[in-house]
Length: 111
Image (cartoon, one colour):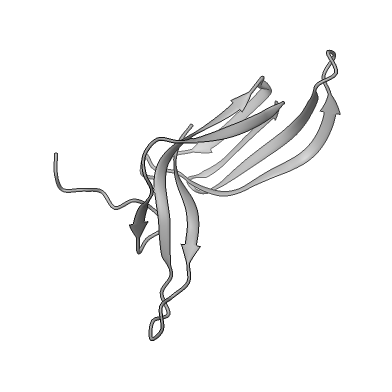
């Protein structure tokens, strides 16, 4: 899954009440996925999605003895949920982090 990953929340400087964010493009990959369930309602949403929370709800051991977790990913926008069993995940940063006043990387006007 391609994501914009927030590495740091940077506290407001003196005289300001606004946070800054260190953000970069990243790839989220789950390993050895089974029992994948995806439910998304794109009705009135744009093509972007915003993850609200990632939870581990259960754990078990695979037949070959590897630990495995049941992950649930809930989205703010659109109304969506992804659930899956996986032996783990990794986040790979695809670029250098950028400082942003938003929780996302601003879209450039340059094409």
